[in-house]
Length: 110
Image (cartoon, rainbow, N blue to C red; front, side, top):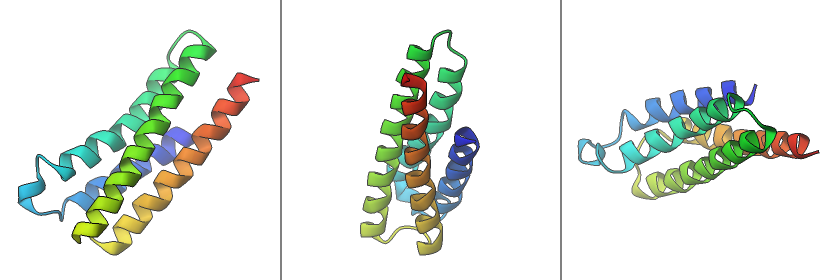
């Protein structure tokens, strides 16, 4: 379920960044997209690893990427980039995914 929400977050980020200025193609647009893709990718890669410890490590990387996304969304807002509605949706999903990852890590560590 957390992976599905992470994918949904990435789709929202792609929609949001589609309206960013062309000058940001290799800047904030690229950074946001890469960080959001990293969240779902690390969740998936961790799931495919052999040990629970490795899985938790990859979940930790995914959570770190959610913080990257959140920071970059604040910067985008400050610069007035993208739709407010899409940005809020992406922020909400990013926060939700981060909380889900923490809960999942807690369960796996027990």
